[in-house]
Image (cartoon, rainbow, N blue to C red):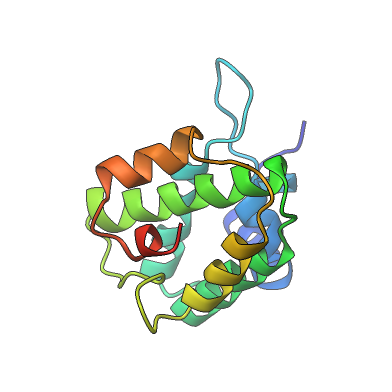
Length: 147
């Protein structure tokens, strides 16, 4: 099991390896105590704390999100990471009231890379948990125009 990163390690590793943050790898792994799986939403909340403190810029976050989406394989595992991060992002943006615009709305920074990824996905994801959660709980979001 990996040890969680300290504040300075978190910032450094996000700036150099942002894909690992979005996948919950290495010191970015935020363990769910009962099942031992990565918890995307609490991890995303931590990210927004660093953004609020200006330790990580919004541009770095957006660039990292785009790099993450571009790196995904079009299979079950890749889509699980994608949908889990999308749901966590919207939970932070809408449920927690984070002051951020929808990165997946028309013309927004992550829209095109998300559209390209969804076009590549070779699985039927209509029954996936986080896909259905975003569709039902956040129907007004830009991602719902894509998938």
